[in-house]
Amino acid sequence: MSAEGHGGDGGTSTELPSFLDFIPSDAHSQFLGLTKHEWVPIVMSALIIIFLGLFSLLATRKLRMVPGRLQALLELIVEGLENFTKSQMGRVAKRFVPFIGTLFIYIFCMNMLGQIPLFHSPTSNLNTTIALALIVFFVTQYQGIKNNGIFGYLKHMVGKPVWLAPLTFPLHVMQEVLSRPLSLSMRLFGNIMGEDTVIAIFIGFSPFLLGFIPLPIHLPMLFLALLGSTIQAMIFALLASFYIAGAIGIHDEEEHH
Image 1: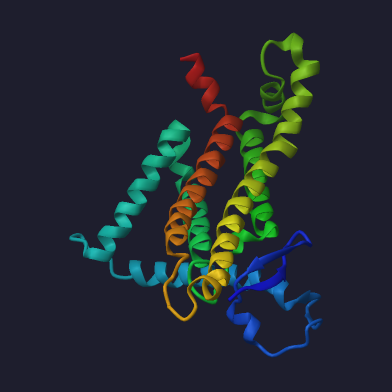
Image 2: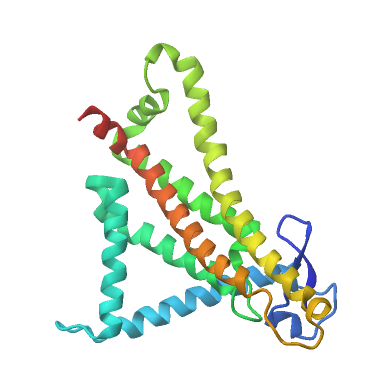
């Protein structure tokens, strides 16, 4: 079963229905200026936030010196995120583990949500991925100015050699303001939307290919989507940590040493 809906960019895309589609309403009715379909990524994102918040509270309320299975799993995840961030950000990694770790877990859960029947991946909507990319953009610029000062950050943007500044400075500005946010948002949006669309198409073809035989022909694509969702969350967190470390000057220090 598939449905035609409007994406965040105003186009149409083949997608499976969500539980919100079963709420009776007029086709053109709006709530707070948004149609029911436009509320889907917002509601799905909020559900992920609520789930992660409740899970964190319940999982950490009774921590023990000798961890149980759930606590051991959480410690393994935290240790993995710490090692991942340290490998990209060096000496400043410790204070950015919460931010990078939250990005990875939040995006990972949003990507995976679309594999549950009657739910959608919020990251298959361009508005969601643009918002995430803008968060990384503002954190990057803030940390660059905070750690280097305005003149130090501008000097970093000029690059070396200085005599090429009329060429390199505009290029670096375009890269920071346009290229990086655009690539972050479009990469995540394109991959997740593509995975969900292909799965929806395969499910829509099932009655024509198999008749009344209930075989999930989309199952191989589902496993690929699970792998792709994990990789895309990792790539987003990897690039975010790389951009922030570059703005602070960690990569320049490593090159100097």
